[in-house]
Image 1 (cartoon, rainbow, N blue to C red):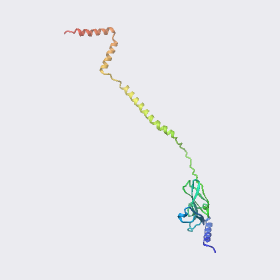
Image 2: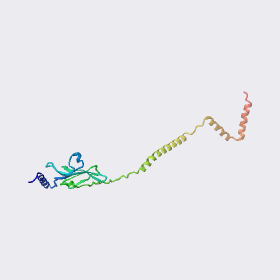
Image 3: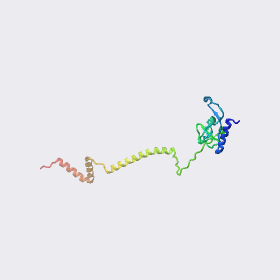
Length: 208
């Protein structure tokens, strides 16, 4: 007499053969939190589900300092990411908890981690990163150059103003300079005659 489980297996294998894929009937079962969840710790789990849904096996684990710790294993229901996968392989890059799923009886008994390498297309004009030293020198020299430009401009304005507007002599300085210039042009004899005339005028005033 065929048991209900055997009939379920035969029906599943028959449907899987018609669809051209491996039908999952049983998976490895494991639960690290079996005491908290009040379940069995390990064993074999039969997979049930709707007839139009595909069944898979899964496994989750952690890598703690190079030591693999299984979190859970069992049946997984109708996930497109598990379709037609004969091996249980995690491809994400360094996840906190690893996960994989597959199709086929007991396919989660062994699980693997093969991360996909992202291939970046090189740009037509690659930009070379500037070293930190260049930025430091740039930030240091720009203020110094700005100050130098301001000083040179101020000196140029001062010189230009000085040449355009020469110093003006006050009347006493102009008169003294004119007298000194006239004294240099006169001969000593003429200068003495003028001095004597001035002295004579002072002592003998003219009478009207």
